[in-house]
Amino acid sequence: MTLVLLVAGLVLLVVGADVLVKGASRLAAAVGISPLVIGLTIVAFGTSAPELAVSVGAAWSGKADLALGNVVGSNIFNVLFILGLSALIAPLIVAQQLVRLDVPLMIAASFAVLLMGMDGVIGRIDGIFLFSAVVAYTVFLIMQSRKESSAAVQAEYEQEFGAVKKGGGQMVLNLAYILVGLALLVVGSDWLVDGAVQIAQHFGVSELVIGLTIVAAGTSLPEVATSVIAAIRGERDIAVGNVVGSNIFNLLSVLGMSSMVSPAGITVPEVALQFDIPVMIGVALACLPIFFTGYLISRWNGALFLFYYIAYTTFLVLSAMQHPLLPTFSQSMLLFVIPLTAITLVVLAVRFHRSRALAQ
Image (cartoon, helix red, strand yellow):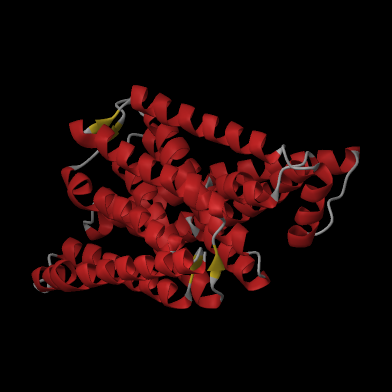
């Protein structure tokens, strides 16, 4: 019965997010918001709605570890698994705006969460600060987008999403999509949290680990579908913008709202401060050299991302099981694989900038 509850919750979350994104994207296009900004805001925030519903629900019911694990795990999953899989399908073009503004903001927000959690809790004041930042970010993006001509935005949207239907009836239909999507998200998140907690109790695994793995991957399914489909269709700015925007939304809005509604704030376990949040920061930092290398995420970059996600998940499983292979696995990653990868990325970035300088 627990597994049925978990799967049913995931299905409702995915369907709810899809319906919500459909209605919200059409409304955004009707008022002249560009596809990149739609990817960074409406699509990204909509596909992150499951994380919001699950984390806020968990925080409200006192399951802070699950709420934190969901956010941190989702951000790691989004970059390593989703961008990795999307890049394997087709090399992804990275918009310069992402490198100049959005990725640095994602990195800054990741560091802010680490600093806020140093005292062992992300409290309501921290939550208000985080949520205020996402409001300011969204307003800035929309204002920037509205500077483009409405005709150009409509043409770009129709090229990537199809013709925009207008009229009073269509407006009501889009609003209905949003309301139905939100309702499905609320019910689905409740079922998913209940199922996840029961699984954690049954196997004797912490709620933090369950949040970092099963719940994080499950609530990120809408991002998987959105980015992979965008990559297949050649909508590469949407594929990358969706992931970066989702990560920003997770840190600022999901974690912000969760710490605001939690009776005692979001407790940050020592293991999260020492390992999981630093991994999330490292993943965010890894985007910069890859994004700078020709503003392209190549297939081998995608394979590298997927490898690291498998390695991270393997570490969590070995750690939860207290497996004897854990020390050997950890040392091989720290002493060989990670340094070799870092050196390779730095060399590629230097080569790219030298080639650009010679070309100019």
